[in-house]
Length: 123
Image (cartoon, rainbow, N blue to C red; front, side, top):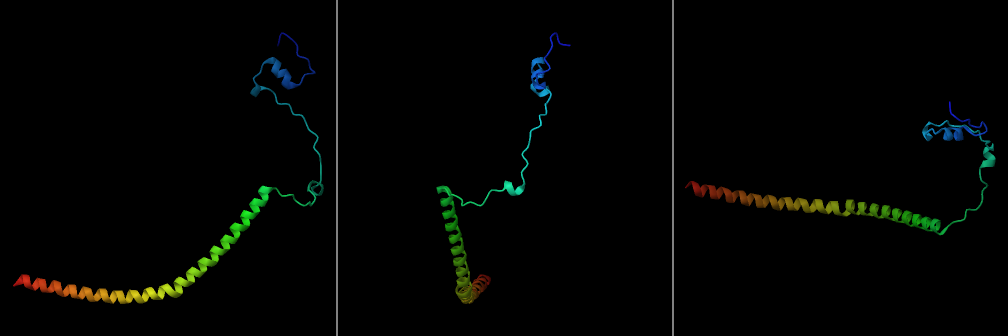
């Protein structure tokens, strides 16, 4: 028992504060609040023309620019792939076969040279 009396008109939180309980040990008082009940139809805002700020306009402009750049990059990459497949691949294949034939001839000459050197050492 406390040596003094606490008036009943005080809230439970104030009573706990007077007693000296730490804040985390105090009673939690539930005070019901009156909620506004509205239907969904009333809660939804009416369609009004949106006012745009300069930042929104800038964002829209940047979005359009990026979209246009993306589509242009896609078109150009398709053209590049078509060019590589139609022009470069056949040319590289043709050049590579002739390069392989020349390399084979050079290797044949080198192999003959090594054989000649081996014969000279054996004599």
